[in-house]
Amino acid sequence: MTVDRSASMVAADIGAGRRTDPSPPRFIRLRRDGLPPLCFTGRMIARHDGRVPRAMLWHDIGLYRAATATYGVEIVAQLLVAAPDPAPLAPNGVHSRPTCCHAALFDTLDGALTALESHDASQDVCPGVSAPSLSLNDPATPPAMLLMQAAVLQGFCRDVVRRYRIGVGVLLADIGLQDV
Image (tube, rainbow, N blue to C red; front, side, top):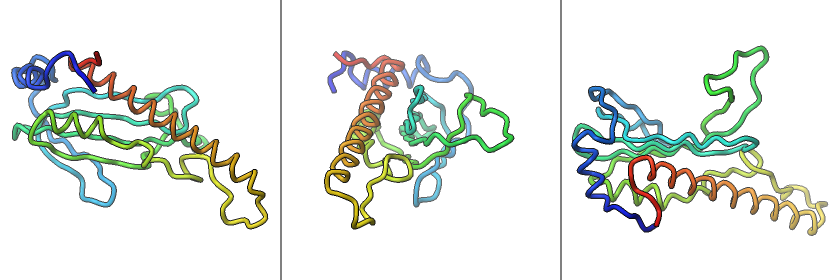
């Protein structure tokens, strides 16, 4: 992805406090699948809530600056779920649960941005849970039906990846890095 400002210029802005939360650093705990949470003291630089109407799966993306002069990246795939009955509406009006949580620290802003840009959002899709399923366990399923199900799943994955990439673009625009 080409940008109109170098990451080092944005890093200087962030380090000078021009593009970050002016509050004092706080304890941040980011969930990770299969690993202990990533914990550090720092500030949020930018956050993108990827929820769009009628989407079953979306990504919330966060970029952080740790007090140790490193950068944190958080990518959380969220799955739309039915509201428990009777339940108050969630703060954003949507009931969801995380299906995949990725978080890491990087020595440089370039490293953090590369991780955001290179994340394969299709890996966060789980057929039958967060995406349309395939009837692979039923030997009576006609091949034409499997092909149709595979095409639906492929389209679903393409939409998830497209929305993730849009989310990264929005996040980069929020911190002053925009596509050329």
